[in-house]
Length: 125
Image 1 (spheres, rainbow, N blue to C red):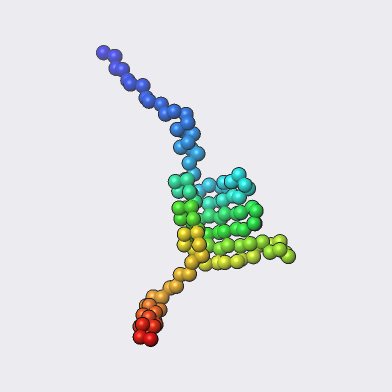
Image 2 (tube, rainbow, N blue to C red):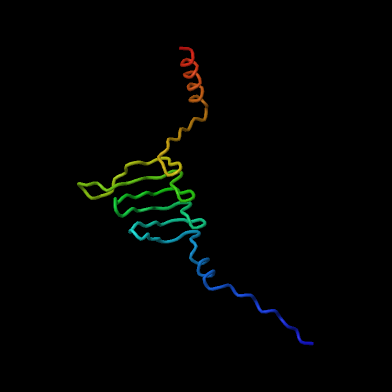
């Protein structure tokens, strides 16, 4: 008795191309139309992990952590110096939601205690 097999359902070409075009993992350089480029890690087609972004128009460079397409974590922002033409660090520190952030490490809770005392004195006035 002959065995018949159902033919495999083939994926349409555009779906295969779209799947291959998705950015995931480590990529070399990805350029934007305006000349900006990014080198680093991707997740679900957005910048996520360690990476470097270069903005061509201003010459700014950000090296550091990314989370869901925004600067988030520790990173360094550098701008070109007008006199020398070399990049100089403008900010090196913590970022949250694409903005500079101040992260205070206080393992003993001294800062929280001082803040509570300050609030009590403010309320007493």
